[in-house]
Length: 121
Image (cartoon, rainbow, N blue to C red; front, side, top):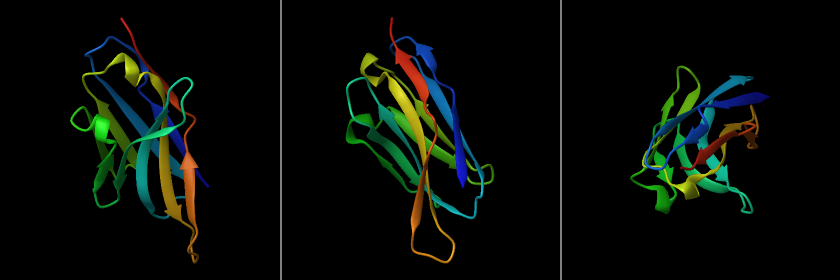
């Protein structure tokens, strides 16, 4: 199994920035895609951004230009730089990773426990 641990969340004023980190550990062979999702109160979990092992990125349309995802494959770590934060960005942010099971076509998905981001004055 793969374990994911997020860090970097907290309370921040509107307009400020935060950087989230997520470290993968455990039975790592080759993680294909890592990403960030978030879940606000009363809403379903939604995509924030993903990044492949080769560096290709995908963002939620509403977050393009403010959020940046990056990855350090040597450290099995994915980052989310969040700029110009707004109150509506308040949510629990979850790290995600996908890895194909050895000798199979099964793609395993792993989730971190989440880190709280609160944007408020």
